[in-house]
Length: 397
Image 1 (tube, rainbow, N blue to C red):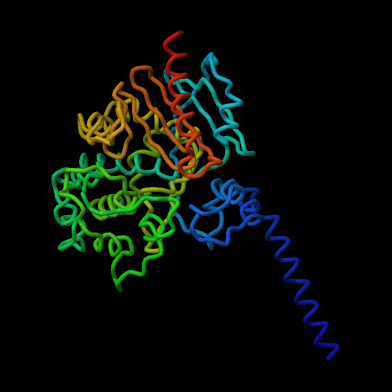
Image 2: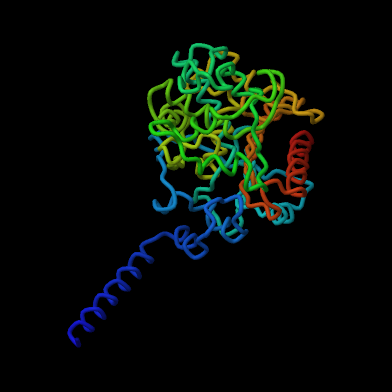
């Protein structure tokens, strides 16, 4: 018995030592996530401390999530420093109100403001949430340019045959991109029974992608093309469509068409659904400067070496109003939020954003964890006011 006890004791000591070594081999982001590890699988209902830790570390622990890595190339796009922009805004107060982890302003191709918070820095990756939608949109343009997608008028079921016979059988690629499918969807982030909360846990039929299985059951609410309605599920469907069309993972296509040609600096990651497909309406993790480089790439017409990655004229359509969202002066393009002054933005819950203003040669990147949740009623208008203040500062120079 004494021998058995000694064996058990030594086994426990070995396990404890292994756990300690493993802990110190983890980076600070992974350790921070483990310290506040959430018990609820749905991040929409995590508390503030859990989100603070997770948003910088969703791709650190394979047991929590799986991902594909997007590798940068050898040619780096410089972001040279420019003169500090004179803002009539208390930047510290703005960042505190936003619970901001990163705030960057690129104007005229030069980095004119770069600030960090929440213990985050330029070396880390922060999750994008729905900012990823605008990346996915650009890959649709690339697939059109490459001939993998024949026309924006093609039906969704042409590329995803499992959608035949569903409400999406009548929906075009363009209607899917503009969220005017007319198919019923509930995007209420506060409702645990909403579609956006439930679709990740859907049990599909054998051999069918989980998202496709969920989406093809949804009923029609309005004729296709007659009504705008925000749906993350539809962007995830766009990602499956692109991946099927090009015959390769979305992350690989992003690496080939944008990440390497546009001169990104650091690896990015794209989280995968349980079916192994990139979650194309969400969950692209990247360094703040690379989000800024993407904004600059779009600002310059999605061109590399003078050649457009998307069809001529397509980006102008993508970033201008294609659907009315019942907000004066604003609209929705191809997965971009638009303004009547010609500016547009990629936008994610909890304060992620890339604002682009071609007239003023302006890119603003925001990463945050809004204290008021996914659609913070104070933080969202405060960010819009900050965009206007930056535009004003540029005009006054």
